[in-house]
Amino acid sequence: MKMGHVFNFQIIFMGPQSPEQGEGENDVMVVSKDKVKPPPRYKVLMHNDDYTTMDFVVLVLKVVFAKSETEAQKIMLDIHTTGVGVCGVYTYEIAETKVARVNKMARDAGHPLKTAIEQE
Image 1 (cartoon, helix red, strand yellow):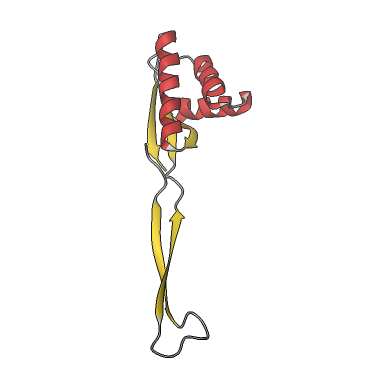
Image 2 (cartoon, one colour):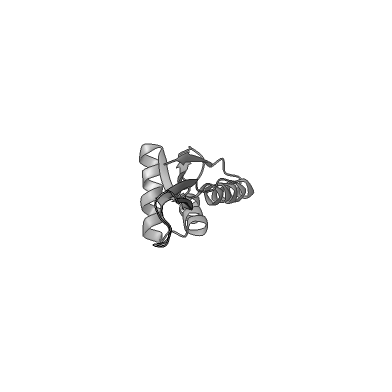
């Protein structure tokens, strides 16, 4: 499972910890902080082929990617005219799950529809 990157840094304070401490009585206080970087994002790409119908591509975009009819039509036309279209951008696990769902739908319907994941 791919997660966000965690960066750990420490801040070190040196000096008297209270007014009662005199010179030479320095304590060291270390404060650790973790910063979480957001996980990388991945594009789910759908590729054009000569066999999968445009209606099926629109259906997949609506069902798997929750696209509206208008959005699905636009992405389908991008796929048809340029050879590839971006269906959405997700974390790796979600992108992987969506590709698996598309592959199952396409297989069940007898279409050779091809999808891919590409890091943004």
